Length: 324
Image 1 (tube, rainbow, N blue to C red):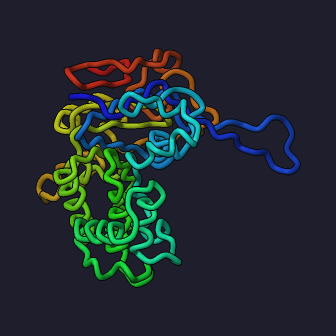
Image 2 (spheres, rainbow, N blue to C red):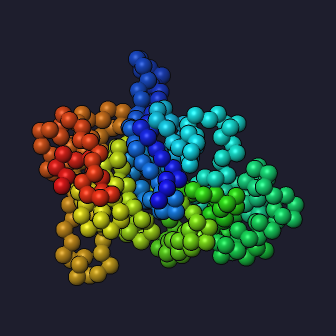
Image 3 (tube, one colour):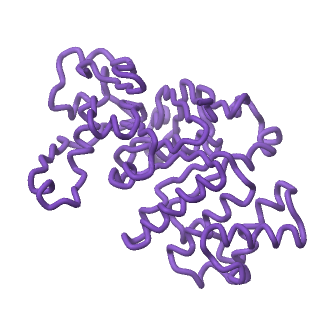
């Protein structure tokens, strides 16, 4: 299977300004530190990790909504990190994003039809009757009545607004969509409907997804592979079934141990492995393995030598000295 996107050595740093009475240079928070990741055409790759691990930054850097400070992102055969905004613009129709907040991601002054049609106008793909027809088609694809195109976002529920945001993302016929925590603002009754919609659109349109989530039950349902991010670094990557059956990194095992089971018997037998303390500051990450300060099985080597991201089984990678 060919790769649609390939990320090599990707780094993103944010310069943090000091306060009015503080001296010295501004500190740099390393949100991503040397990430290598491929996304195959037609797959759903899930990205998981705690808040602050760099998930959203990675997703946005992959489509140039955030400028990398180092590394490359190849979309098909093009290094999009080497393009200025004028040369990047024609490619933007091929990768889109669905944001976490369906309330804040839509312009309240625009009608639904205007919001969905905006990208079509920007890229010169449709005008007039053709644009109206494409807007109606996108609304139907996400399960909404095309007659709603004349209404404004405030007239819709959270679940409907997220459907509208998805309609806007698919309007230009993209190849790749970053879904950045698209379910977290919705209640449980709506989450399953939106998951089904993502799966249906993937089949209909041949989409490729980067699905960012903290909900490992959802990830198990939608993803072909799962990448685990900790403090700006990938610590594990594997096919979904393999990762859930044989997690190799202690951080992954801790995340999976916190996932509740719908089976009451299994839930009572579940052993939760809590993580000690909070993640270290990205502005001052620990030496060696970044996870060693919270790891229950860390050895001396973990505190001084950074583990390589190694293939421990076919398609299963982990960055841990003790991974087998």
